[in-house]
Amino acid sequence: MVNRMGFIGGSDVAAALGMSRWKSPLQLWAEKTGEVEPTDLSEVEAVQLGTELEDFVAKKFEKKTGLKVRRAPKDYIHPNFDYMRCQVDRLIEGRDELLECKTCSAWKAKEWDGEDIPQEYIIQVMWQLGVTGRSVGYIAVLIGGQSFKHKRIDFDQKLFDMLKDGVIAFWDMVQSKTAPMAMGLDNGTIQGLFPTSDETMQEVEDLNQTIAYLQETKMHIKEMEKEKAEIEAKIKQRIGENLGVKTSEYVVKWSNQNRASIDTARMKEDGAYEKYKKITPMRVLRVRNTGGSK
Image (cartoon, rainbow, N blue to C red; front, top):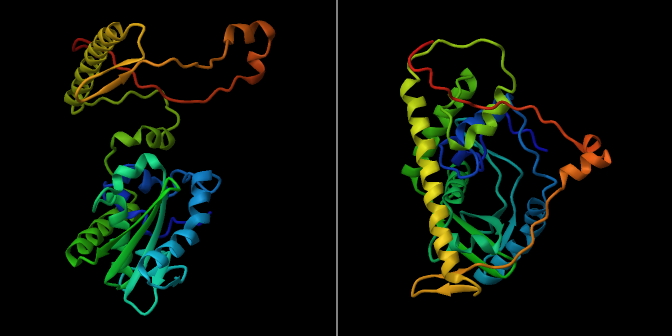
């Protein structure tokens, strides 16, 4: 696995700016500072297939466009900031252009409808263009092994400057060990940063409103879950013995399916439960209202 601690690459930028669906600034910061180990994706089959299909996607792009591509050098470094780097899948021969190759499942097809490109990939290609000093980037994607699309992204200096400024601010936080504010994605990251607790209780007052809002949110979730259950029950009652119902706007199916589960009581009786039981240390957040007393 490549050691990515010493720089910000094209696939890091969206996370650094809080614009990624998959990774938060705090998680990226924790990886870059060495506070947590990055997840090793090299053994994930989807990642392996993406790497293996890169050459196919590049060749398909050549056939569709008539452009010729060649492999790019392994690493590019920004002339003014040595921690700003990128890798490029392919360069377009005879042109000031580059190509990024992607694969995705059929479930992601709508993300590529019309002129749409997932935000994270626009940011990645814009970063590649700015770091390499090129003017045009293409992104080619194989969707579900059945559909191929390619799209053009022109370099935008203002957008790149915004990305660069954000990365400079993020890298300053990495160097100073100043953690970004946590986001909804970060419960797992925070568990990794603070895996155990001591017996100290901090005396704080500034969290009163935040904790109150948490409790209110949990109450609303319970109410919504109850309302959801009631609505589902009414729909199921209308479906009855039928497969489902159709309206002018929706198709609803109440289908048969089997669910596998482990009979832990039987395993305990057989003596197998203790043999295969796995205990994972974790911390659980619980809130108790003290009524104003300490």
